[in-house]
Length: 159
Image (cartoon, rainbow, N blue to C red):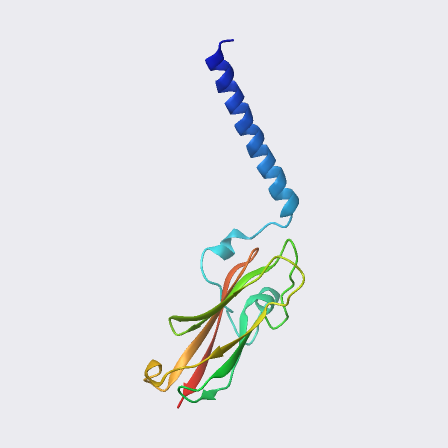
């Protein structure tokens, strides 16, 4: 065998071994299979009054005053699900973010460990010009590593 053929076969063998190792590692560290259809779009509760178990654990719940004064700070608590989402090495919430309308207001990133509950408190100040109609919509989004992106909304009156 000449040198060129040897190098070609060695490179192909190394590439094949690398692919096999990657597949084995993925199965070892991520044994739970993800439903890829949940990653196509942002998921929402189909019927907020009758959430299924997946929606109960994934739709962000926003707790905030129904009415706030423009220019004054208030707290917005976002928890992932009515039933707190589990956090572990194979199934976790990657982040929670809050938008005021289309504007980003805050974001919290999580690690794939069991140390934290995916619950975040933001302090928000809404200027009067941000609510010309007298209300704003708060939008919370989160991403689960197995179940994709989820969104919850809440309207707040601004005086």
